[in-house]
Image 1 (cartoon, rainbow, N blue to C red):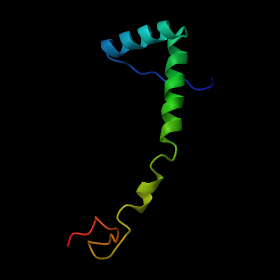
Image 2: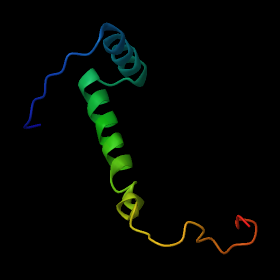
Image 3: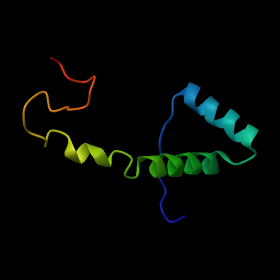
Image 4: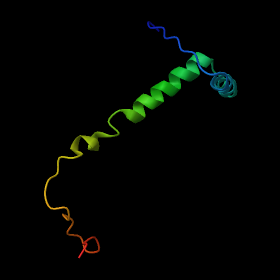
Length: 71
């Protein structure tokens, strides 16, 4: 590891980290790194569809599927 980051968790969060790391059998640092990596993987491109938000123009009732028409 080449980068050190310091953060100050609340007492409750620190207790949860300690307990969860102990149950997992890993160090608290390893526990936090694993969870940050997991969050990064889940966030990586999971909201790509949002780049299209607001780009579609046209009539408010664009749906042509039966059952979705407002008439």
